[in-house]
Image (cartoon, rainbow, N blue to C red; front, side, top):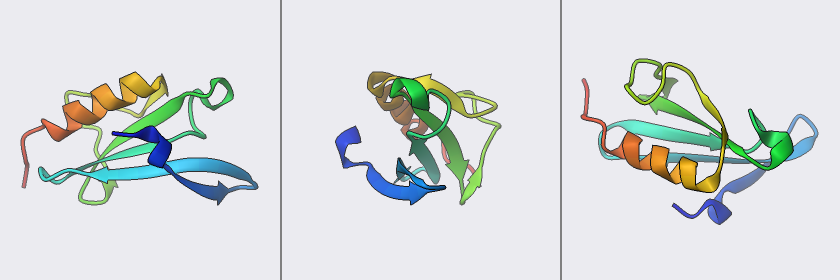
Length: 86
């Protein structure tokens, strides 16, 4: 995942990077730069399933903040490896 391709949008008067990465298993990684860690240039990631936040995965029961680019990539790979659920 190349974080330089994150889509810049205006959110509440400032620029933010937002990217949603869909995986074949039905999960999505939502990556933002204006969440936990924003002031340090870090990222936040949330696991989504069918368009809603999913707090029931072994990856996290919340959003993950204060992440480096390498940590975002690691968690995206973990989300991509989750088994599909109905």
